[in-house]
Each structure stands twice: as structure tokens, then as C-alpha cells.
Length: 215
Image (cartoon, rainbow, N blue to C red):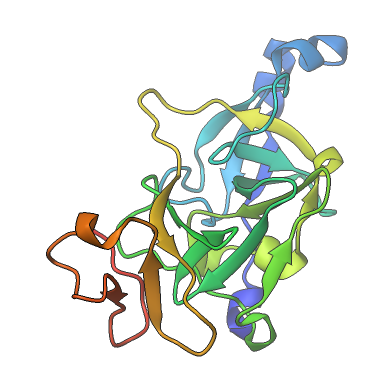
């Protein structure tokens, strides 16, 4: 895990030549800027070297939005919005739970697992305050994000990247976190509506290696 923390986060540098074409100052505030991705934390959606457009944020941020933020380093970082103000985010057995409900992220490659980056964060809950967001990189194994530096304030988020055509955001599955000390996730649906592939108790057994099952 220490080696993970030492990896460089996905960085963005403004493409100066394109910025000149688009204008600076007040004009830039109106039409946004073009950025070049440096690093792999948002791969494969935004690989290193990709050009992207950072638009001014004029509507409320939504779960699944890709944003550019000021993380206190040179340039900007690019991450995805996972948790919204007032929510509680928990990472358990490779899955993300929001307010104890399982979050499905169809924009991620299959077999992507979200784990804490340090032993001290295992089982931790991130309670988001007013105007705080929980951000993650899509490449969960090579991303320094809210798992490392915690919730991000709204004032740190500077631009939003327009989603690609046909983008499908995250949604909640009908499962909640298990009771403390157990390894089973519980369905929210009544027992008679649970799929026949589940066991008679109406629960899904996690894989032996402790990872969430994904279609």
C-alpha cells in the first residue's frame, strides 16, 4: 500500500497553445479550457495524454460527474464524484456503499475493486459535511483520491468535464452493508422477489476472496 501512495496522481496541465486560441481571462471563464491528462488514475476513460474540455460548473454536481479540482499541487487533478454532501461513504470488500447501500458503477471496467489505500482506513466511514464531496479515480489501484486526503470541499472543484454521449452514471443496487462481524450483504427486496440464484435466506454469499460479485 505504501508504494501505491507514492505513485503520482493523475495530473492535468493546461494546453497553452489551445488556451491561446480559446482566449484567456473573462473569456476563459465563459467557455472553459482544454486540458491534457498526465497520469493513469482515470484510465481507461481518460488515459494519459488525452485532451479534455473543462467547462464552468453552472448546475449542481451529480454523482458520476468527472471534475477538475485543486488538490494543493501544481496544475489540477481529475477525479469522479462518488459521494455527495450529507452522505456517508464506506468501502467494504472492494465495493462502495453510500448510506449503507451498494453503489454500482457501470462506467468502470469489470473486476474493478475499491479498497482503502492504507490499513488504518480499513472499514472507515467517510461522513460528508455540507458542501463536501467524496472523489475517486476510475483506476482505483493507481489513484490518490479521497481515500487518501478525505472529502473535498466544493470550493476546490473548479471545472466539470462533459460526459460522453450515452454515459450511464452510478446507481444503487438492492443490497445494504451486512451486520457487524458478518460477511453477507443483505437484499432490500422482499424474500419472494429475490432471484432464485440467491440462497433461501435471501442473501448473496460474497466470493471467498472477499470481493463483491459483479455481472
